[in-house]
Length: 142
Image (cartoon, rainbow, N blue to C red; front, side):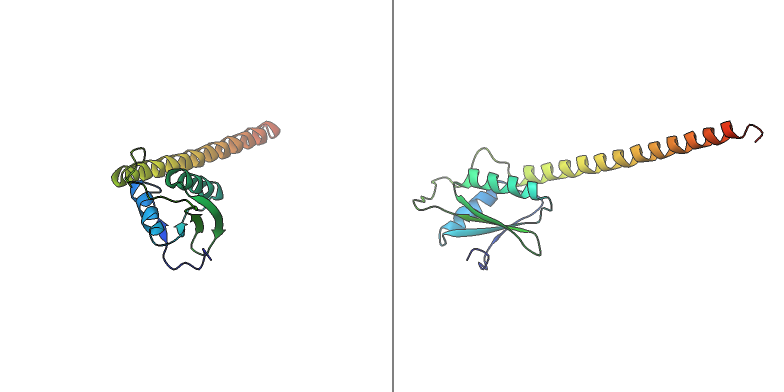
C-alpha cells in the first residue's frame, strides 16, 4: 500500500533537515503513511537516513524498498499520533546549513578519491622501478 502512494517526499542532496520533518508531519495531517524517496546508492546510508527520520519524526518504520530511481522509505505515523505544536525542530540543520554540509561531504569524498588515485600511481611507479632494477641486476652489460 505504501509503494502505491502517488504523493511522496523526495530527499535531495541536502538530506534530512528541519523542512523535511515538517513535510513528513504535513503528510501525516491527511494520511497515515508517508513515502520518502532517497537517491542514495549505499544501502547503509539509506538505513541511517531511515533511522534518523524515525527518530526525528516519531514514526514507525514500515519498510525500505528498492525502486528504479532510488530507495523508498515508508513510515507509519502510529496509532496515537498527535501533531507536534512546533513542527520545526531545534536540533536539525537549516536548509542552507544542510546544503553547505552536503558540499563539504562531497569535497571530502573527492579528496579521498584523488588521494587513493595518487597512492595507486605511486605504487605503480615503485613496481616499475623495482622491475627496472631487477632487469639491470640480471643484465650487467646493458
